[in-house]
Length: 68
Image 1 (cartoon, one colour):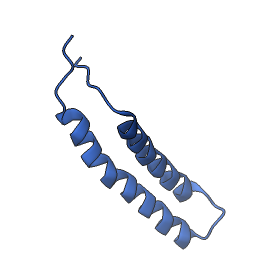
Image 2: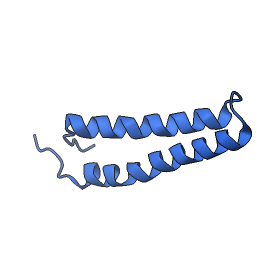
Image 3: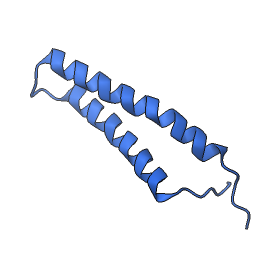
């Protein structure tokens, strides 16, 4: 396993994308709003979470591993 350093802002961005994905999935499964609204909001949040995850993952895995 290779160790990589991740800054606090990067951790915040990564966690916010996870929150967006989770909220989108939660909205898709909820029954408090109409099906059409639920689907639109859920798909938007899932899309946002997925699309913003890609550059963050590339940035973290593109860093050089920490040498001990």
